[in-house]
Length: 168
Image 1 (cartoon, one colour):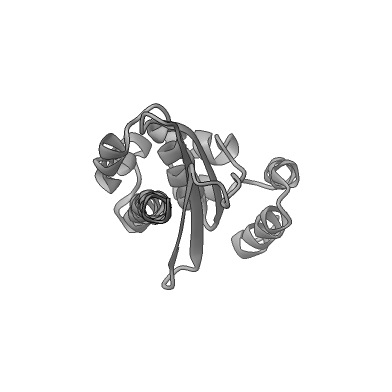
Image 2: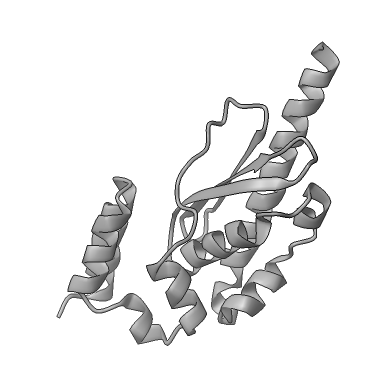
């Protein structure tokens, strides 16, 4: 049986090269890290079947990008939003290098963002994500990262559009 550290390394290596399919193959081939920690099925669902993985064109004025990290655990999260002319989020994407809880938090955040106005999106709190995913207390920092990424993406979008409004 492969150690948790070796499994995490194998899955991380697959994710680093940007291939979700390889990561899923690694998870099938080896026992899940989560079985040792008894994660809730909501975390497992978003980890094993992440929604909205990918990137948007950050050069577009309609796209805001937030990149945040947690030095303590090494998780890095990039979350992007695309906003229409009415100020509603029409698309959200993420790429996360981190643990299953960080990936699940990113995935759920993108699902929650779609269709919301910027003000509604700003009201999404880490506690909303943690409650929905049923994160254990030791993993709450993952939901905090997702909240920070949302705020950073909205700030980036707002800054881009304020800058273009002043130059126009």
